[in-house]
Image 1 (cartoon, rainbow, N blue to C red):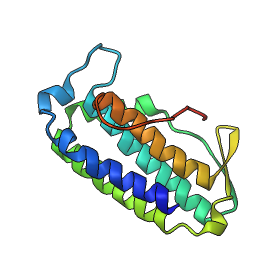
Image 2: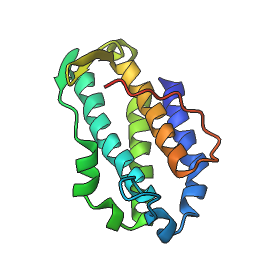
Image 3: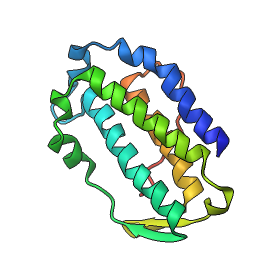
Length: 158
């Protein structure tokens, strides 16, 4: 999992300058009323980090677990990311993901086969969930920074 942790850290480091260059107005701009702004996409990534931290830790403790997924649109709306400060969201996003890289880096190999079921889908191994998390993050960063040099192979599986 060293490569996965390294990849996550590299994404944060390589994209932070471009993310910081986005103005507050640009971050809040919605291309359509029913689409997320850059702030809301980043907020979703913060929510994803929180939910994945729970999955990671749960599977570090248990060999099998089942959870109910979260309502991502509701989470974004309820937390009012559209009204949040862009710079503060970036700071939280970067710090949270640095912590997830730390967890991934220190995950013992013997627990990578632990399995999680989400909304009756799966089971998914901890190794898959960790790798997929980084791909999910890249997928959404490409929505914020379409010209970023990121390859995402993300496919929604649960």
